[in-house]
Length: 83
Length: 412
Image (cartoon, rainbow over all chains, first blue to last red; front, side):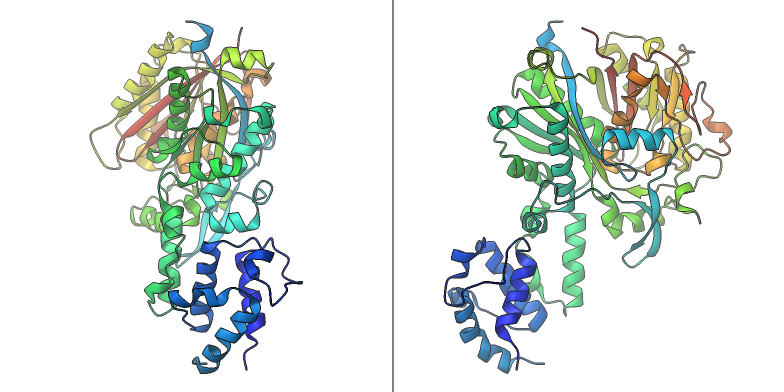
């Protein structure tokens, strides 16, 4: 099973390479902890689609707010995604 | 002319394939050190090209570098270097009276090619097209990135002027200072052309892409066996000020800009028109209140193409036929063709001759093409010539845009 948490962290590391991603609080909003703006979240969505064929519709973008919510939301999608 | 109508250069920031500041670049020019190497170009494989190796993160975060463009990154580096070189107290500078004027050959090809490539690699999924595509490819992007980086709130734009861009950006800066639109201009040219495969393929299709087993010898303007253009990237930004402002803050003054001209061939998409080039040079000389005999040094555009070099050689011979003491050199043998940055970079490379009295040579001219013979052409090794007071810098581009810029050794 895909390690969704690590997948999201890897993407954030590429999108915001100046940020320290080693001590993110999973329960807290990512934007509270990291210098991420709305365009960065579009990039996260884009990379999920490009790298993992996982689609996130626009109305679900708020579900990517924290690492915890990412795992909860993306977990089933990764489980269902084509390998 | 009142001093407030005199525009001077007080800072230079540059990156070229063989140097990341003026001192390094000048040394490379005098020592005939090429910056052209073999590089892998998408689809085409090994090609000669000039790439810059400046530190992209010296003035920019990794995130903003990723968000922006290569052209923006080059521009930001050059602008910051120029400001530092000028000794400006940036914190107290009125940013609303600073303008950014950058000449470009083209912009957006690198980003567009990359998006198409990525889409093609991913099953033509158009939803993978980046939301950054538009801000990256709008034509003002390289200049706009400089304003974001330096908190400049004055005007910014690029001047789309093909390979005349390096001169045209400077001319725009001069004009805006003369109009009183700004008090300080960051002006020059920038190019990321060597990052895009399309420009290589197009020059190859024209039979105008340089090649040689030894890449350092590929770019050889005026040479009998030249076979085209070595495509390069680079940038050069000058700090321009009105003379009284420069004097007031005790700035070092590299040169005064005393003449310029831009005209159009109106004859062909790519082939140059030597007669118009002569007219352009003479117009710049007249504007400066000079005669051809006053010009000590001419930097040719000289790209290494068959037709272009012959045309320009004829034009320079004609323009300076009454001037037996004018020296002539060219720069693209060292660095290839830096496209929209070429005019600015090449001008910067000659400015130290005001103080060292040397004319740097055109490089790689093993056997001069008889059709390109020009009196006082300096090739292959530097020539000490003593006092140099005026330099004329040629920069020409496709669609028949010609530009000539004249700088003078500063005298109070």
